[in-house]
Image (cartoon, rainbow, N blue to C red; front, side, top):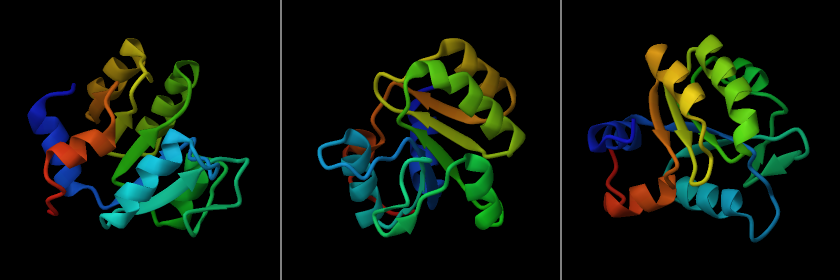
Length: 141
């Protein structure tokens, strides 16, 4: 977890990101980060039952619905939810066979992250994907 190779592999091989907890409210970290990632060519799929659309994309109430609508093609789940929601999200990621999981800064659950890794999922925890992508020079795969 959090190894430089894992971060690099995720950034270079991800095209579609389901952002759990993406809010359309200005000033929210989730919106700023997702907007920058979208501007760099990543497809952003909002997952938030309280939103209808965010960044021009239809929002899905659950990961299940996002996966079903996009033929299972989600490369990464990026989580902007409180840590107490992480175990349930990880169970969904495992069940849906999504290969990568990114828990944003402050979103930590060691046990859930270990469960995801044990299922073969590449995990980054307590890091900002935007900061990591900027550090990588915004290279495209």
